Amino acid sequence: MRCRATSWFLLLLLVLSGCSRCGKESGPSGGTAAKPATVERYLPRDAQAAIVVSDLGALGEKLARFQNLKIASFLAKLQNFQSAEGYVSAVMRQVGVDLRSRQAMEKAGIDPGKGAGAAFLTANQAFTVLGVKDAKTLEETFANLARNRLGAPERKEEKAGGGTLVTFSRKGAARPELGLLFIGDFVLVAPGTTVERLPALASQPVEKSLVEEPVMAASLARLPKERDFHVYLPGGTELVRPGTVQGLTLTGLVEERAVTLRADAPWPDTQESLAPLVSKEAADLLGYLPADSFLVARYRGDPATLGGVWPYLAGPYVTRAVQQSGFDVKGEVLDNLQSGIVAGLALAPTAQLGSGLPQLDIRRTSPFSYVQLMVLAEAKDAAKAQATLAKIPEMAGNFGAQVKPEDVGGKRVYLTSYRAGEGAHFAEVGGKLVLAAPRSRLEAALTGLPGKPGESPVAPDLRDAMKEPVLAVVLDLRRLADAVRNLPSEAWGVGGFAIKATAIRWLEATDDLRAVTFHLSQKERALQAELSLKLTAAPPQPPESAQ
Image (cartoon, rainbow, N blue to C red; front, side, top):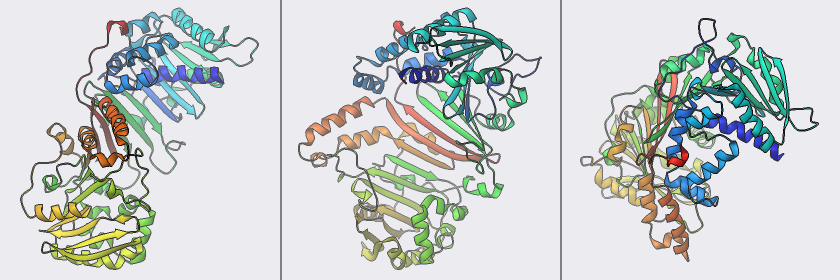
């Protein structure tokens, strides 16, 4: 079992370490006599997932810089290594090839510039495609791995699949532990039971390969050309269920200041069903959100188009309660909202972290003991908005809550409570609808909303992430870390100084992580998303020992 797990570990290391484009375009290619074969030629269209790359060395050099992040060193120390560089070097020694170095890979017989890829055929079967610089040297590299890591010294060679199949087995074993099929400028590498499938994969018809796969090609044309790798998941598989989308294409870009993953999927429904993702002119309400918000979201679409979407967002429990009450969400709420809804989440000073991170269950614990919330939207008709709010107390019982109207500072507000404690409160202020919790946050909104907006709570270096997308979310990790550091002593419980010290060490280890941003939009009848991890500064170059 240990050797079998090791074989998969080695295969995945080669896959993950090879996912690089380094800014080069990777469109459909190959497959005819006029064009040289590419990685896509040996990856089947019906795989559960396929990864396509073009330069192993470039990504290895990029990722080598990240081993100098504080979080990487912190995690390495948990594994009893002095640094992340030392941990990664130890792993590379086990693999037998330093995947951080182009020169080391070429010395092992791999040609990083010819590309690489991988296909996951089933939950238990996968194989890798690598470019070959020197077939004899590359075979020796894998022979050492098979002998030293898999306990499989027995070598066998035969002609198969239009190339040469070399397998490595344990003494007396009928099934090989590792197989290499050399064909042209590439080698197909597979462990265990996948070896027997290599000949068919190497000789598959071009129309069954990823070469010019139409769904993937169209997605890549819509996505930015700057990418380090792309992943294709065809529709109708265990990963992308039948009846959803034709296929999902992901691209990744690794930069010194960010790691970004983008997704594109052709929309299977009508163009009208994409209406919620069409950007509209919207008032800028960000300046009304509290300055301590560590998570900020903005929706620039037309809320009236969300009539068929809100049940999926609210979940079955809320949807059922609303339906039982007879409340018309679209007519009463969505049709009366303008574009530009914003939301902000801040850490509550009442948060109790003495027992570690909470496992929140909204049915038993009020989330507003840990976070403070504000959601703002401009109403088209303020009088209608007030009338809608007046209906909430009657329907609150369907949610197991109690809502009471009350006058606060001359304004009618609706205060919510339920078994677990304080809920979210509502009010209409100067034509703006506000949902806030706890009560102190609502009262602050009553004072601030009648005036002009202040500065956006989104930090200046992150504001570009909020400009264009229909739906944009920014999680400011630095602000969240500062909020945790500034919690009062009672937040850490009895003897909390030790717990706080541990938490601070974790926070210091994540100083290099600046923020996470998320975008959702549509383009040419396709759904697109982007997830990006922002870094505070460019990691230093790796030491010479990693070259």
